[in-house]
Image 1 (cartoon, helix red, strand yellow):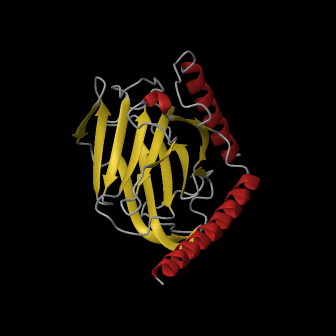
Image 2 (tube, rainbow, N blue to C red):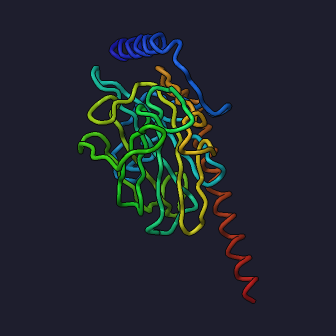
Image 3 (cartoon, rainbow, N blue to C red):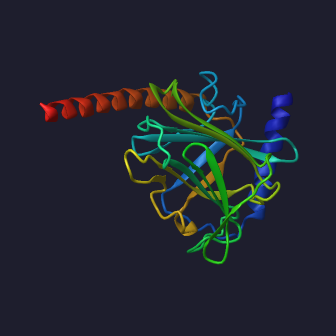
Amino acid sequence: MKERIVRTFCALMLCSLLLLTVGTAMAAEPGYERTSYPTVVTPTIDGMWTSDDEWTDGDFTWIGEDVAFTSTWDFDGTVATTRWLVEFFTDTTDDAEDYWQFCIDGDQGGGSSPQPSDYMFKIIGHTNLQWYTGGVGEWMGPVTLGESEIDWANSLSASPTNSTPHWILEFVIAKGTGTVQMGILWNFLLGVYDASNPGLLAWPPTNPDVPNTWGIENYSSEAIPEGLTFAVMALLSSISVLIGYKYFIKRKETKDDTQ
């Protein structure tokens, strides 16, 4: 009974938000939409899978064959929270120039350059978090945030999706609190950069400085369908085998070239 009440409340909350956003510009890159499902297992933010079911309540989105990410959301009656996992399967080295990048269009307003409702954070060298806010056509900052505005951790770890240690990022953002005054609904761009294999991998594969080209984050009030969870894990297992095979071929080619 309690679960039904919570589900009904979440559905009403989302419907209200959608009604409030009618008429709002939702400029975004065509074909780049994904869905965030409610948090079932609250993750421990330690940069690794604390348990095998920690992130199975989210739908995975792929950036090529090298990166997968997922997100969930929850609402405590006052604050909406978004929780994220990013796995960079082919980044197995610790480089000072590596970075994670997350751009947020806080009101889905779009634009050809960063606006005051836009935010970006970078985690550089796996240790240094920097936040930026949109200004008049450019990013402003870095800016200082309160300690409670983002919780994050990353590590070189194996996971249920890949037994080879690789970089894993987990982060949590409480929306509409402190400096980061973003709405419940948003557009975003997620990017990863490995200095050992230069080139920004991003979803969407567009310009981090142009909000019009970012993707849309939709929200569901229903838990992720059970069939989709099994399909996601099966796909992740398949990709894990594929990545292992790619590494084997790469090592073999390198060895052959030196002979």
